[in-house]
Image (cartoon, rainbow, N blue to C red; front, top):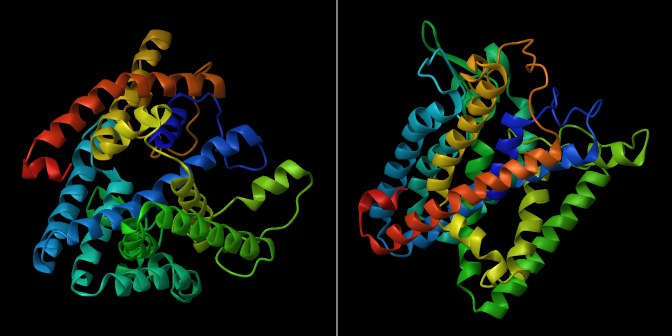
Length: 371
């Protein structure tokens, strides 16, 4: 959640006029500031699958399936309302690019029919999707010739005209993300092991996935459509090495993020005081997600009003600006300023997260279980 806040703060407040992944202009600190946020999407889906498995252990399959479908629909509804309003600060639905909650919600709906199967079978299905989609994907046509269902599930940037003047653009293709969620559902059994065994399994699995990434990427064997090759200097060679496909999530991006995350989970003691603030935020990820974007967006609006006397250029999503858009002169901050503002956002939201975590722990409200 903290890495996500850093990336979104950078998106709104950076003074860099180009994409941080543009290897022709970027520099390592900027590139890897952006790259660390790539952990968010795979981990959100993988952990959501683990959470679904824990929920399934307390419910009969029919109730679990109903909970997954209804929660998926709630997430999609939130994406199209509260989340969109936070990003856009307008209610003009002429152009909408749903983001992560859309992908999680649809993946939950796709997971629902599988809960009658043994968890290890669900995990195998998910792992198979992740392993094979890079091979199957190129067989399907893209653009206007793509079957609508395949385009919805797999083709980033595909635009669907809902009604004249209303366009829905696929931003997070959910098929590989569903695979990660289903894999997490099967992996949940590891987290039920005794602590010593659990930590050992987590580290071993994470190391295996990380080594698989290094092998596949170094020799361009499989799992990424952009082959790696040494560049003019070491810095650009390393950045190009980690230039992986986020959407649709490639196998190598999944290995490069889930692997180190499992090592971290197996080695770090979250009970230590140093991690307590992050644990508080992590206990209420949906609440944090819903409030942090409008807060950052509001900060950007306030800064623009203070500097220029107007902020109309911020009345849309930074991911949906018109072609040729140029940042206002002298706008924004370098990386040190971006990191400082991220700390401001985290500190500002910590009391609210603590309050909501406490409320959720004491409440039996069915509504709060969805948030």
